[in-house]
Picture (cartoon, rainbow over the protein chains, first blue to last red):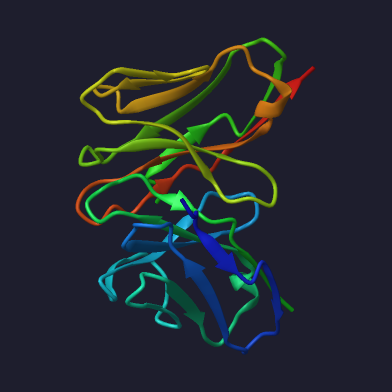
Length: 112
Length: 112
């Protein structure tokens, strides 16, 4: 069984740039959720995708957007990067209607 | 507003001792309460989870105690080992949607 994989592992950007992070869900999982984890904090929900549609969103501005593909993999896009966007971005997959979520090891994004 | 409050922020325990981490929530619609373990540079890994229809769940050295009337739940780690040294997060979610609300984390150090 393949777990959740995320790429890249680390990324450095400057303010105002755009970034795309990628996630492959665990085998058999059709739902993907994205979280932002600031240093020393718990993960904060960004949004969830199911059947290629956004299925719930946390308190994040529209410059955070996403996609889900037919194979259930997903992308997180962030436009107009700000210094406060520096964080670990985590992807979690699950089966729709089933609550356990399984996390990848994240992408560490640093904004200079 | 923090939906799930976690304490203590940090915990130091002797090898063989019991580690206890507490969480409290307000939203009675929550119906799933997992605990995650996170090592540096890794994503959160599901440790154990409970639903509000039971008061206790045990898996190996890890036990969740759940008090529905007090809206509190706790993680007990029996016979704590140095390898248990990590950050622990409690979380809560509700159907549908399954957005996870995380606590702020507890850094556990087990001293040999």
